[in-house]
Amino acid sequence: MFLDILRRTFAVVILKVTGTFVGGSAIGLQIWQTAIMAGIAGAMDVAQELSRSYLADGKIDLDEINRTFGKIASKDAPKQD
Image (tube, rainbow, N blue to C red; front, side):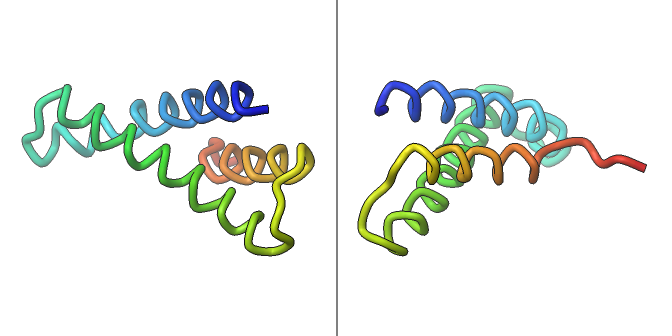
């Protein structure tokens, strides 16, 4: 289960990095600084959502993990018109 969370967190970080590059370059950050900033933001998104699930019932099961990553994925999904 831990490896699954780690892999999926890496995917969230990739989503954050691609979306953050434009913002980071607009304010004058170097690429490596933007990547680190996005990586931290992605990891914190995952940690925050998993913490909410843990606080609700004191455990994290596979359904809660799937819901957490589904929620994050839908938040970063392209908008449909």
